[in-house]
Image: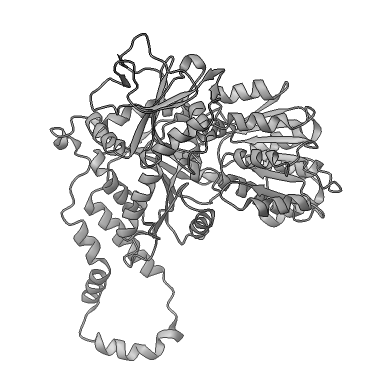
Length: 613
């Protein structure tokens, strides 16, 4: 393997890398850095999460950047503010010895005027989220006419989050002569479409097998009924006293609920989701990086771009909606050559979802048994004894107290002393698991839950109570898909971080669910502009009848009048009659999307987390 010096980097950059502890380039760095330095040809690069993509595209740009020019020479787009901040931080570390160099991150949720003041002072590299980048372009505060490099990092996720239109707007104001660098951990068809539309004869680099998981991560799954999902999570944490992990949930509501339960049960845990302010997110991440927190409960969007070393586990409390997202989740562990474990907690009916993931990551899941109370107590007790055995006694601190202590314990022999010590430290743990049930025995719940579908239906009914269902008169024939529908809703600026539930894409119309607290705002947003169109078709949005359990129906119209309020300027799709009942929805579907998109053991003092009310 070559060194960073062999790749053609200047001494100032090599010095910064050496100070940071970088010794040898990774495969993607070894392939991408010389290519970008030597050529202006566009580059499409695949690399697994955790293999050093940021250095792969930023180091050659730093090598070639003109430090005498203060205008923006490189724009790097990332899907989330966490990732944008992390990339900007890495670039600052790499450029420590480059005099006159400036980089900045621009992202939503932070004071835009402060970001504008930084831009006015002159920067060579801007790292931004698509939404804030477009906002600054429209305000004419971010000028990209001198850009030489455009980097699309985590391009697959930007598409999943509905940022296609924002990408188009950024590309419109960048020179045709720029070099476009596209980096992604997975390459679904949508990313290949980006390459075809935005790039000119790109060179392709693959570091590892496409869309596969890293070899340093093993994949396990536990099967439990849905009501035992949280107890199973607790047992997984308890059987791994040194666990340091991210628990992924599908919605911010679920994220907060799980984090609150862990905190109440004495674990060192906290949450990370789009509803938190940037200051709150920074506080949580600082605690997690310092390992003050042991368990971070997060949504996919919030956790993208988190550069945290030495995670032992990633736990999928719920499997992601998008199969490719599993690759990003599992890639949070097993980084930089270390070993990691990715765990999926699934109900019986969800086992079928593991097959598509296995095909993408090219690895098999290993079924594990949820540990019983006896095994957990043994593991925790031995961990306690190891801790005592390895602890260094400071004689100078306790010396003056020893005579009194020894006098008080004079009547206890060695065995009795050990028993009492263990009991004091461990009685609550032993009591908790004394009569613990077997969570693996899902068959005894079969009368109440014949399979996962019944449990899922009940869960959806609970979620449905918080959602309003809307009809929209565009569908698959209008080239609509879940990501584009999310983007369309996002454009209306209904509310910050509004949550989307079920999405059903049909041929000529579709349905979607939004947080019911924003029902009026949603209708108003689509009414404000009577010229809202999608692929040349006027858009019409209406509140529709909620789908009942077991119902195939969608929207009902009677006598030509809509079942909900009308909004938007488009003409309502009637489907061939004055009255209709939509039946057998088919096509693309997505659900529970949010867009803005751990004590080592258990902390019995319950100091380890922060409650959000």
